[in-house]
Image (cartoon, rainbow, N blue to C red; front, side, top):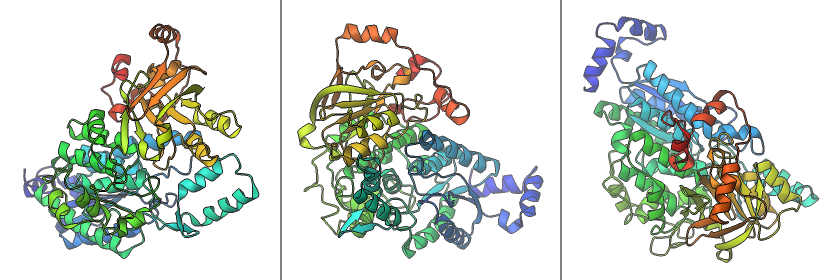
Amino acid sequence: MTYRSKKLNLYSGRGSSSRRAIYKGCGYDDTDLSKPLIGIVNTANDAGLGHVHLDRLAERVRSGILQAGGTPFEFGTIATCGAVPIGMPHFRFELVIRDVIASSVEIMTGVQLLDGLVLLASCDSIIPGVLIGAIRADVPAIVLTGGPQEVCRIDGRNAVMSELDQLVFGADFASDEAKEKIRYLEDHVCPGPGACSLMGTANTMQILMEVIGMALPGSSAVPAVYAEKERYATQTGRRIVDLVKQDIKPKDIMTREALLNGVILTLALAGSTNAVLHLLSFAREVGVELSLDDFDRLSRIIPVISKVIPTGKASVIDLYNAGGVPAVIGEMRDYLHKECVTVSGHTIGEISEIHRSSDRNVLTSADEPVFKNGGLVVIRGNLSPNGAICRTTTISEKIRKFTGPARVFDSDEAAHEAVVSGKIKKGDVVVIRYEGPRGAPGMREMMMTTDALVGIGMGQDVFVLTDGRFSGFTEGAAIGHISPEAAVGGIIAIVEDGDTIRIDIDERTADLVLADEIIEKRMKEWRLPLKKSRGILGIYAKTALQAHLGAMIDDVVTSEEQVIK
């Protein structure tokens, strides 16, 4: 069905009078209703640093839609900032919000019979949330990200939020020197709106929107406060009208090859481990095959070419000045699937031919990489038979082979307390469990423990293993997303204090060194600790997929056997 026949059917055919009356009551007329009806999904609010400026961009999007002959309908959905509830049980909502946002976008688009969507979002689970909603709504869509914030400078270097977290959660945070620096960073480390200017989850996901084809080339890394971002907003508004008329939907763009391009850039930039969850979920929604095996295979050959924090010392603003995402695509041209189309109408191959890095101190070439491979790697072994994820660029060579005694905790708070009170020693392996998708519920990020270890200078002396997540800010030696998680009977559930754990990053293994018969005996005796949750967390605790499948709510999971597999 063409756009025109669909529109005539919905707003001119039999039964259309009531919907026409409703929209006329909102101030629209017959001419408005004869044009493409474009939803502007605006995640702006006063409490989210990455989203506080999006109203300004929404106005530009609206102008672009009108210029191109569409009718804009702006509506909002929720957007949180994960930095606010760090150290609180409320952090459990930060992954769950992805499902809530997706549902809100799907519902609004369906009920209001919108023809297309512009998705305005900036951070962590918010970007994948709005995009998944658009995929489910099955209408043409385009993403406009809010961009990175400006970067704070201290003593001639970049300072970002992770530095503040490491101070706050470190052991000597109460010293006069630490207090003075903390106060300075509180006042200056977030100079204004936008995503924190390092390769955290927010900027990783912003960048991925371009390479998987869902955002205009060059738009994502433009700083939040630049006029160029507003120009991209207007262009995005114009472009969505064309996409509606051509009936080009996310499923037409987000092919397996496009998502593999997303994997490749995540690895090349040593992006956030959370990108793994989101890319797997995108694949599930569009109905293409993507698994941890793809990440594992590609991580063995994809070079790391980014020096953005935490891999190096550069900021995302520096990456923008080096050429932004088109430059990354250009430098990785020999690895990418060039035939993939984008919302711009251009292919990845066309973009890759004309852009290169202008600053090798920020973005190197594939021929002279920062690391030969393995920005993120998949870890397996008896602790994680379904896979776990590790960002290797923050792990020193001296501890890539590591064997030590387990120190076991059932929450990030308990592990953090042990670190700052001096109970964790060099050579220990901190195991944090019951923080997975169902166990938390919500798969929290173990930021307090890892930041404390880095803050006290032990980030390269202690490994942290968890069935929970890590922030894109995380530095040090850490393995997360252990699957199956403790709450569904994964081996991590029966690890005891003092058990030996052997880790080999190069071999990509993490094992509990224990006889099989002892493991089997403990598993028979294991019982799930009682933890009740109501509302959305209760739903998540019963229905969330395991991390290696993307950790979204899913109604297909009906038995413990399916959960574990």
